[in-house]
Length: 229
Ligand SMILES: NC(=O)c1ccc[n+]([C@@H]2O[C@H](COP(=O)([O-])OP(=O)(O)OC[C@H]3O[C@@H](n4cnc5c(N)ncnc54)[C@H](OP(=O)(O)O)[C@@H]3O)[C@@H](O)[C@H]2O)c1
Image (tube, rainbow, N blue to C red):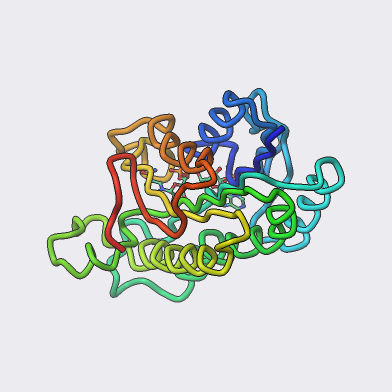
C-alpha cells in the first residue's frame, strides 16, 4: 500500500491531487487546516505548514501507523503580493509568502524525510510555477507584466532551487524530487482567472508522484514538457 501526503489539500489544485492519488489506490493523508475540507476518500491530517510542531505531529501519525511515506506533495502556498508592483512590495509581503511556500516546504519535508527514506522509493513533488523561472524572468517578454510578483515569483524561484538541492542530496536513496507547474488554473489563488481546471492542473503533479524507479529527479516541468530554470 502506497502512502501519500498532500499539503493544502482542502481546496484548489491540492484537493484534486489528493483525490486523484486516492483514485490511484493510495492511502492519502490530506494535509488541511480545517479537517472538514479533506476530500472524500482521503484521511484528514491537521497540518499548518508554518507550524513545526504540527509537522512533527503529522509525521508521528503517519509513522506510527505505516512507518513510511511514499509520496509527499508540497502544494500549499499563498501569494502575498498579487497586484502589488515590485517596487511597492515590502518585507511583510515577502515574509507571508515565503512562510508558507518556502519555509513551509522545508518544515514539512524535514519532518517527513525519515519516513520518505523508509519508503525506499519515495517521490517528492514541489508545486512551483513558471513564474519562478529566472530564464523567463530575464527574457523581458518572458513573463507577462501583470504576473510580475516580487514575493510570489521569487518564492517559486527559491522552491526550484530547494528542489534541485534535495534531489542532488537524495540521489541514490530512491527518493525522486521534482518541481512542477500546473499551468494557469481557475482557483482561489488566481481569482479564478485561469484557463485550466484544478483537476487539469493536478495531473502533472500526479504523474510525477507515480514515477517509476527509473524516473527523473531534479527536474522542472509542466504538462507540456520541461520548463527553463
Ligand atoms: N492556480 C494556478 O494557476 C497556479 C499556477 C502555478 C502554480 N500554482 C501553485 O499550485 C499550488 C496550489 O495552488 P492553488 O491555485 O490550488 O491555490 P489555492 O486555491 O489558493 O489553495 C492554496 C492551498 O494552500 C493552503 N495553505 C495556505 N496556507 C497554508 C498553511 N499555512 N498551511 C497549510 N496549508 C496552507 C490552503 O489551505 P486553506 O484552505 O487552509 O487556506 C489551500 O488549500 C500552489 O503551490 C501554487 O503556488 C498554482
